[in-house]
Length: 348
Figure (spheres, rainbow, N blue to C red):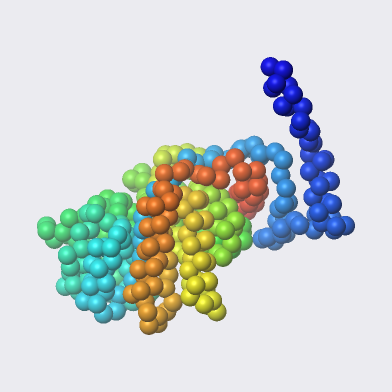
């Protein structure tokens, strides 16, 4: 015990004021407020926090650590797309995001998805020119007895129009947002989401799968805060509507290709974006390639390798919400969530 007291006496006790004074000294006359980070219509964040925020009226969701290693394909040459998908699946791809620019027939869908075992992967579908009948060919293809699939693993972009395939038990709703958009934009997205949720509850329909596509920004902090706030507001909205608190939300995050960067810097940027999305707890991750990339196959493999390194070698699918307890992330997330929720309430 005496040795322990002697050991403890070797260290000074520091107060909050001590750290403020130390930071001010390091700034060499510049005020500590000069480091405040202003984002989104004068929403300001301080560089130092000393207390973790209380939950207030927010319901913080449970963390999620697993995600699908995904890849996006623009469907033009049907056989070439199928060949590329099969090759990628053989090299560890878990999810396929298909973007089509025209309505495909049942035969054409059979060419695109030939030998693709849908029951083992996640299939996300987007249409560049959505209409009420763009998925009829796919519906016919899926209804064939020999095509096995899991309904909850097929996500269809359809906005607010109910164009759900009759063969699917779930009703995915797609909302596209970006991680560097302001709180007002996120509130507007949730206002649209709320209308769909309310209509489903009033009609006593089965729970929808609400499918959010999020374009990641270059900022690690913005991505984490935005994605975590999205899940917090979603949970709050369910509570406000008296909906089943387990109503699913599915988040697809896209690491956006940045113009003007050399290939090595682009890969570093994609890695940072991917880590931030995984840390925040997304469901599907894809890293976009440059349009017209003459070396697309190689870059796609590198992008899959980034995800393999994070998931299979770094174990980032085992740690749930690694930012929990970080005062900085806690405060940023709380402040942003409060602003989104306030804007959302103004719209309802």
